[in-house]
Length: 131
Image 1 (spheres, rainbow, N blue to C red):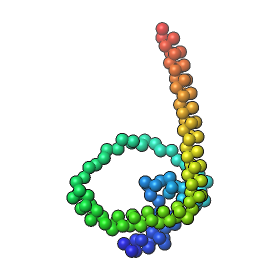
Image 2: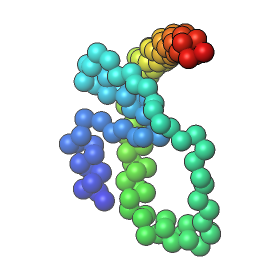
Image 3: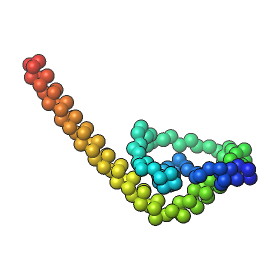
Image 4: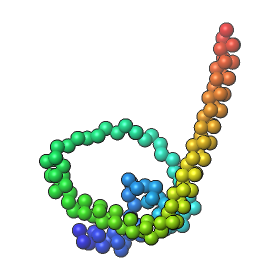
């Protein structure tokens, strides 16, 4: 475990977490000097089923994966430290990412409305020809 922690700290330039994806992407942008890291989610299941486990099963899983959980907590700590170090810049990148996503959503909605209008016009022409 200590060797794994050392590797996370010394051999990787950063740790990112899926559940903190936006912050991880913002940190990646700042760390690597990337121009753009904005993204759009696709095919997201908003009604994920929740798996219910008995308390004894949860405890057994925690015991079995204790070292993994400790390494995960250490990785979270490293991420927190880097984010805190670059807090104002991270906040600015997150704001820009939100703006870019909102702009894209607005453009995508406009395109979809236009395509829908075109389909309605085309459908009306077809109906008139058939009648």
